[in-house]
Length: 148
Image (tube, rainbow, N blue to C red; front, side):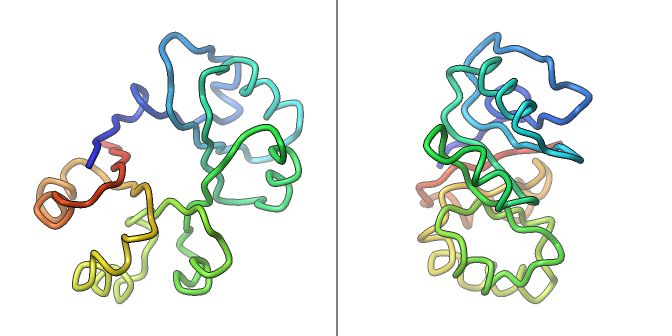
Protein backbone atom coordinates (compact mmCIF):
# COMPACT_ATOMS: atom_id res chain seq x y z
CA UNK A 1 0.00 0.00 0.00
CA UNK A 2 1.11 3.54 -0.72
CA UNK A 3 0.28 6.60 1.38
CA UNK A 4 -0.21 9.86 -0.54
CA UNK A 5 -0.25 13.24 1.18
CA UNK A 6 -2.68 15.99 0.19
CA UNK A 7 -0.85 18.89 -1.51
CA UNK A 8 2.30 16.81 -1.84
CA UNK A 9 1.24 13.83 -3.97
CA UNK A 10 -2.31 14.86 -4.81
CA UNK A 11 -4.29 18.12 -4.89
CA UNK A 12 -7.80 19.45 -4.85
CA UNK A 13 -8.29 22.21 -7.42
CA UNK A 14 -11.22 24.62 -7.50
CA UNK A 15 -11.88 28.18 -8.64
CA UNK A 16 -9.78 29.59 -5.77
CA UNK A 17 -6.54 27.85 -6.75
CA UNK A 18 -7.16 27.43 -10.47
CA UNK A 19 -4.01 29.32 -11.48
CA UNK A 20 -1.65 27.14 -9.41
CA UNK A 21 1.14 25.52 -11.40
CA UNK A 22 3.13 22.33 -11.07
CA UNK A 23 6.24 22.67 -8.94
CA UNK A 24 6.74 18.96 -8.33
CA UNK A 25 4.88 16.11 -9.97
CA UNK A 26 1.36 15.69 -8.63
CA UNK A 27 -0.02 12.19 -9.21
CA UNK A 28 -3.74 12.94 -8.86
CA UNK A 29 -5.85 16.08 -9.01
CA UNK A 30 -9.43 16.24 -7.79
CA UNK A 31 -11.55 18.65 -9.78
CA UNK A 32 -13.70 20.51 -7.28
CA UNK A 33 -15.20 23.23 -9.45
CA UNK A 34 -18.62 24.65 -8.61
CA UNK A 35 -19.14 25.24 -12.31
CA UNK A 36 -16.81 23.11 -14.45
CA UNK A 37 -15.92 24.43 -17.86
CA UNK A 38 -13.63 23.20 -20.58
CA UNK A 39 -11.50 26.33 -20.09
CA UNK A 40 -10.93 25.51 -16.39
CA UNK A 41 -10.12 21.88 -17.12
CA UNK A 42 -7.70 22.83 -19.90
CA UNK A 43 -5.99 25.32 -17.57
CA UNK A 44 -5.30 22.52 -15.10
CA UNK A 45 -4.14 20.14 -17.83
CA UNK A 46 -1.72 22.84 -19.02
CA UNK A 47 -0.54 23.89 -15.53
CA UNK A 48 0.05 20.29 -14.37
CA UNK A 49 1.48 18.55 -17.45
CA UNK A 50 2.91 15.59 -15.50
CA UNK A 51 -0.41 14.64 -13.91
CA UNK A 52 -2.00 11.66 -15.62
CA UNK A 53 -5.06 10.93 -13.45
CA UNK A 54 -7.90 13.04 -12.17
CA UNK A 55 -10.70 12.63 -9.66
CA UNK A 56 -14.26 13.73 -10.34
CA UNK A 57 -17.29 13.40 -8.09
CA UNK A 58 -19.96 15.51 -9.76
CA UNK A 59 -20.87 16.55 -13.29
CA UNK A 60 -19.54 13.17 -14.41
CA UNK A 61 -20.99 13.32 -17.92
CA UNK A 62 -19.64 16.83 -18.44
CA UNK A 63 -16.13 15.90 -17.25
CA UNK A 64 -16.23 12.73 -19.34
CA UNK A 65 -16.77 14.82 -22.45
CA UNK A 66 -13.98 17.25 -21.50
CA UNK A 67 -11.41 14.56 -20.61
CA UNK A 68 -12.24 11.93 -23.25
CA UNK A 69 -9.12 11.11 -25.20
CA UNK A 70 -6.97 13.45 -23.10
CA UNK A 71 -6.61 12.04 -19.58
CA UNK A 72 -7.91 9.22 -17.39
CA UNK A 73 -10.01 9.83 -14.33
CA UNK A 74 -11.49 8.14 -11.30
CA UNK A 75 -15.02 8.76 -10.11
CA UNK A 76 -15.33 9.34 -6.36
CA UNK A 77 -18.40 8.25 -4.42
CA UNK A 78 -20.48 10.95 -2.77
CA UNK A 79 -22.71 10.79 0.27
CA UNK A 80 -25.90 10.83 -1.83
CA UNK A 81 -24.91 7.81 -3.95
CA UNK A 82 -25.74 4.20 -3.27
CA UNK A 83 -22.34 2.50 -3.17
CA UNK A 84 -23.41 -0.74 -4.86
CA UNK A 85 -25.06 0.87 -7.90
CA UNK A 86 -22.24 3.46 -8.02
CA UNK A 87 -19.60 0.71 -8.19
CA UNK A 88 -21.53 -1.11 -10.92
CA UNK A 89 -21.81 2.05 -13.08
CA UNK A 90 -18.18 3.15 -12.81
CA UNK A 91 -15.15 1.01 -13.46
CA UNK A 92 -12.45 3.34 -12.10
CA UNK A 93 -13.51 4.54 -8.68
CA UNK A 94 -11.97 6.18 -5.67
CA UNK A 95 -13.61 5.24 -2.42
CA UNK A 96 -14.04 8.17 -0.05
CA UNK A 97 -14.79 6.52 3.31
CA UNK A 98 -16.21 9.79 4.67
CA UNK A 99 -19.01 9.62 2.10
CA UNK A 100 -20.16 6.12 3.03
CA UNK A 101 -23.36 5.45 4.87
CA UNK A 102 -22.82 3.74 8.26
CA UNK A 103 -23.94 0.31 7.03
CA UNK A 104 -21.67 0.59 3.95
CA UNK A 105 -18.71 1.53 6.13
CA UNK A 106 -19.37 -1.40 8.48
CA UNK A 107 -19.78 -3.80 5.56
CA UNK A 108 -16.43 -2.77 4.05
CA UNK A 109 -14.70 -3.10 7.42
CA UNK A 110 -16.02 -6.66 7.73
CA UNK A 111 -15.20 -7.61 4.11
CA UNK A 112 -12.26 -5.39 3.12
CA UNK A 113 -10.49 -7.70 0.69
CA UNK A 114 -13.67 -8.54 -1.27
CA UNK A 115 -14.64 -4.90 -1.65
CA UNK A 116 -11.19 -3.40 -2.18
CA UNK A 117 -10.04 -5.94 -4.75
CA UNK A 118 -11.17 -3.69 -7.62
CA UNK A 119 -10.44 -0.33 -6.00
CA UNK A 120 -7.10 1.39 -6.57
CA UNK A 121 -7.48 4.40 -4.24
CA UNK A 122 -9.18 5.29 -0.95
CA UNK A 123 -9.56 8.73 0.61
CA UNK A 124 -9.55 9.07 4.39
CA UNK A 125 -8.08 11.23 7.10
CA UNK A 126 -4.81 10.34 8.78
CA UNK A 127 -6.35 9.73 12.21
CA UNK A 128 -8.91 7.30 10.83
CA UNK A 129 -6.19 5.50 8.88
CA UNK A 130 -4.04 5.06 11.98
CA UNK A 131 -6.90 4.14 14.32
CA UNK A 132 -9.08 1.93 12.09
CA UNK A 133 -7.61 1.02 8.72
CA UNK A 134 -3.83 0.65 9.03
CA UNK A 135 -3.81 -3.05 9.96
CA UNK A 136 -6.74 -3.89 7.68
CA UNK A 137 -5.02 -2.39 4.63
CA UNK A 138 -1.43 -3.45 5.27
CA UNK A 139 -1.54 -6.12 2.51
CA UNK A 140 -3.73 -4.10 0.14
CA UNK A 141 -2.05 -3.06 -3.09
CA UNK A 142 -3.72 0.33 -3.48
CA UNK A 143 -3.11 3.97 -2.72
CA UNK A 144 -4.46 5.77 0.34
CA UNK A 145 -5.02 9.48 -0.22
CA UNK A 146 -4.66 11.10 3.18
CA UNK A 147 -6.43 14.28 4.22
CA UNK A 148 -5.98 15.94 7.59
